[in-house]
Image (cartoon, rainbow, N blue to C red; front, side, top):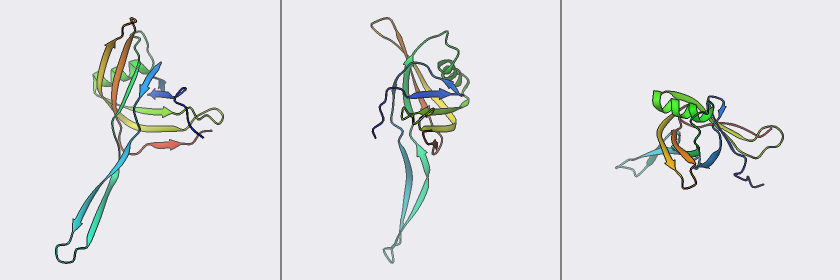
Length: 137
């Protein structure tokens, strides 16, 4: 089954971020360091922890919104960590599959004036480690 991007949700501090316009890839990786013995040629690989790359999101900006968009902006301004989650639209009942991080840091905040008069807010969210994944229910 394919998952459509329409219907995804982003939450910060358990608050909906608002009208999501784009979301980047959830990319995870592990650093690998190799040690090669010069006398035997044996290679040992040290496997690092799972890391998640920073994630770019953009939403329609509403300066009077006191929900998720405001939480993202406040987290950026205050330099605090926030719980962050993405819920996919693969709903099997009430909730889609959810990827959650406990201590996300908002490292970039940008406002873009669009031709039609709307304003987009773009954020880069640095995610700590591997997410907690909760299957659709």
